Image: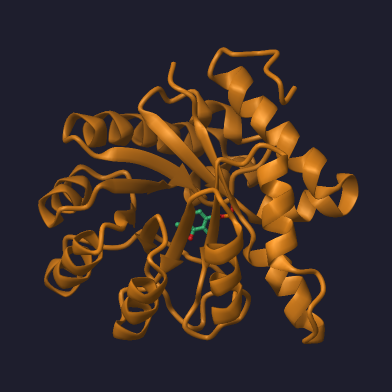
Length: 253
Ligand code: PXP
């Protein structure tokens, strides 16, 4: 099976920094450590309210990290201007509501087609890979393809929540939808990513989906870093991904 890329989301390093308003801990340093631990890319969500990652963080990440940056953002004029200024490797368009704690669902690209179309077009024209964060639903996938997205990122949040709640029947139902969605997206010619809420316990069955090219994981890795350090937390996740892909005993093990 193809190597499954790991994008490490460093938003919550910024959350801790912002709790005191100073400079420590620096997201850039975390990104450098993540790369040293085997991350294939760095992901950061510049939210409208700047609750974690700041504009300056994005500047530093673009300038000082030599792995691809995946910028998550809402489809707004302000964010489009920022993306076109920094030209990250990829932009993942996500839904954003001020009052939510985290991104709660996928983008409804079917309902939002007319709003999203110019964003996809302008980002793609600037040679930025465009990813749409969607639920694994055939209609959403077909519209993502029609919009001209290069990538879809399948939302794994509900799968992880069902696992955490001990509702394994529901978890397995959602996992089956993720598998079918990945297959359908690949059939349409879309590159398939997945992410949200993944942990050591939940990553394996997702990593084993053969069509997946990349996982984006953040909150759990940063939380686990409190106990074992960021390097160890990322290496363990990498190892679990590799084991699930049938490649046990890699250099990161
Ligand atoms: N993918 C997308 C599109 C996201 O919005 C997020 C959260 O910012 C993630 C992946 C990572 O989720 P988590 O921090 O729960 O691992």
